[in-house]
Image 1 (cartoon, helix red, strand yellow):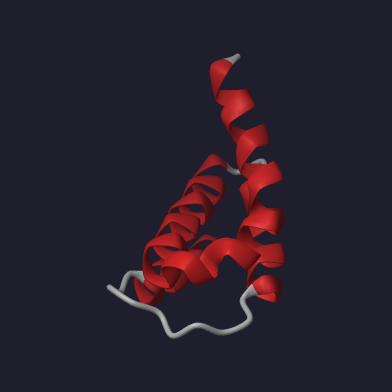
Image 2: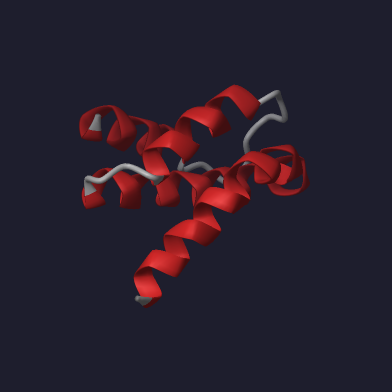
Length: 79
């Protein structure tokens, strides 16, 4: 899992991403954000950041999928 996500992280680290339907990718990343392996979870959050940076306003569609998982992840960090 980790190697696959690291590869996706490298591929998504670009200045601009062509707008497309990333909802399926967002669903997969959402599962990895909740993963018990901290390294996998952290890389998934970083991929979200890259997608947000690259897609800009077009990232709005993905936020509906990712935001609940990200908020839950931040709640875990506080406790």
